[in-house]
Length: 168
Image 1 (cartoon, rainbow, N blue to C red):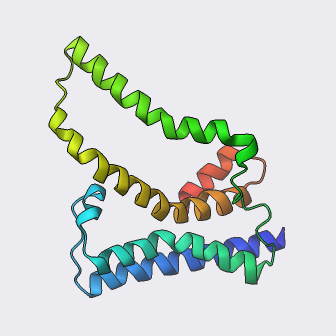
Image 2: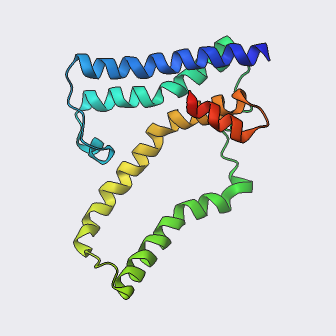
C-alpha cells in the first residue's frame, strides 16, 4: 500500500506540474486560445503543442511513475488492444456513429423536429479528423486519471474512487 501511496503522490505532482507549466507558458507567451474545443483545429502550432503537452501530462506522469518510481511496469496498464476477444466491441464503436447519426437526422426530418442541412456534410471529414486527433490527445488524460489514479485511490470501490479522482 505504501508503494501505491508513493506512486499516487508522484503521479499527481508530475501530472499537475506538466499541465500547469504548459498553461503557464501559453499565458506568459500571450498565445491566443481558441474560443472552444472545436476551435482547436484553427489554433496556432505553439498553442496546439502546449495544449497537447498539458493534456498528455497525466500519461507522461504515469510513465515516469510506473517505470522509475514504483517500478511496477505496464503489464496491468490496459494498453493491449486484445483484438481477438474484443473485435466486436471495436467494430461497434466504429460503426455506432455511422448508424446513429443518419437515423437521428432521418427521425428529425420525419417528425419535423429538425430540418437537416445537407450543406453541413462538407464539415464531416474535418470533424472526423479533429475527433481522431482529439481522441489521441485526450488519451493522455484518460490513461493517467482514469487508468492509473482511479484504480489506486480506492481499490475495489469504484464510486469512492470516482469521487476521490474527481476531487483531485
